[in-house]
Length: 173
Image (cartoon, rainbow, N blue to C red; front, side, top):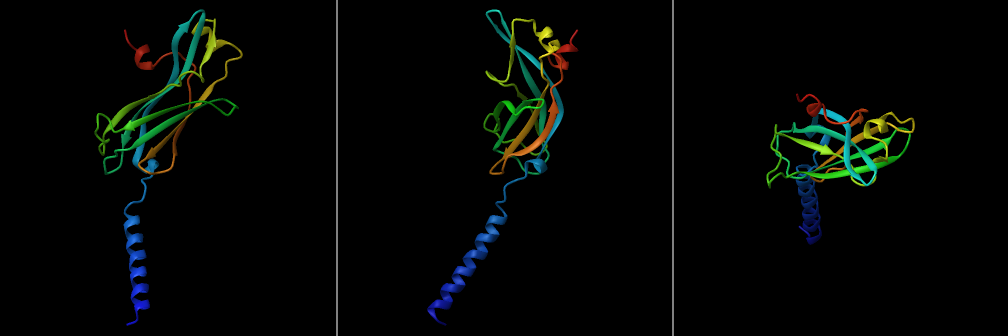
């Protein structure tokens, strides 16, 4: 056997092993691993500054790990768009780990996105009047996730309801 043929066999064996090991390290697909449950949208009243009131869009949901393995690294973002316009604001969040623990298979947790700074309406009008103003433009929220080393994947597109506050709060006595 010539030294060249041993080298060729070693290279081929290395490539085969590398291919097999990378198949087991494939990045998870966020659409297959995660699901959004009970999506709710609304407008939140932010702190008043002087005579100026602020309204910010909110998207809230339960994120469930529908996969079979726990996920240590889940990042999410929401992109808020006024109808007919490009992205108006974004909000980012590291979702998992929580308290150092991965999101277990079958487990869920609450996620709330609200932009800070840009991406809010401001006016001297009362918040309820702002929603009725003819210049008010409705907003859509797109929710994206990354699991481990995956790429960003869109999980949902929802319209932000033209109402102030969560239904949970509105239903309190």
